[in-house]
Length: 296
Image (cartoon, rainbow, N blue to C red; front, top):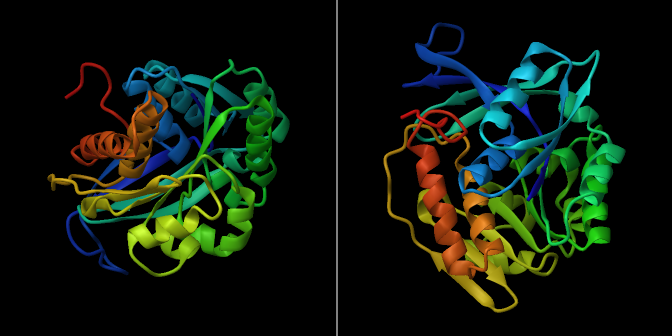
């Protein structure tokens, strides 16, 4: 498995009530590794998959710490280290229901197309590429995102893309984005991202519309389940509610569980259930990554 995208520092701000603008709000604050691509790679490694992360960090303490964390989690890091630029960081304001991200992408915006192409070209036959859409959604890193898709096509890899975030998708334009990912094997998006890319409607309707652009589409609805649409039909699943400590990284875990199962031969319903199971693990703990070995 190859995963392309962002590796950043998350500053997790866990607040129990409303944020009191202009005043003080009590919170628990933690610093940890983050980034959609890095999180997905860590969750894939937790399933026993061999996974390589392709990303960029600064030549700084934060970058070294982020790479060390992933290496300890079993992820091979094909990471550019860029002098003179800081590793990206994200302030994540999180409660039980939702999270808001304030982002400085830093070195992630400098990910080089030739680096991405070289790593993908050297991948073993039969590999799979998972692309976080963040590189596509920002001008600085867009050549690297497009290079990843081109290199995967040339090498005959299967490809999945996570739509990443509704706001940047809206800024980039739904039509442009769908042109970039046209004929991708699998596109994953949450309800907000599906609204941007497919317009209003039920999750099944949105996923079905997206199959005009990609081979298979999954629309996630959090506690409401998920829907897979492809040439063979539409497969919805309902999930059992679980207590939520922190939704950060749940979508990344879902993607990892689904992709691991699908690439192992699971059909749409079983792949969706595998994604939901890993997503449930993610929301049951604070932070966006699996617990380190030996931790609770």
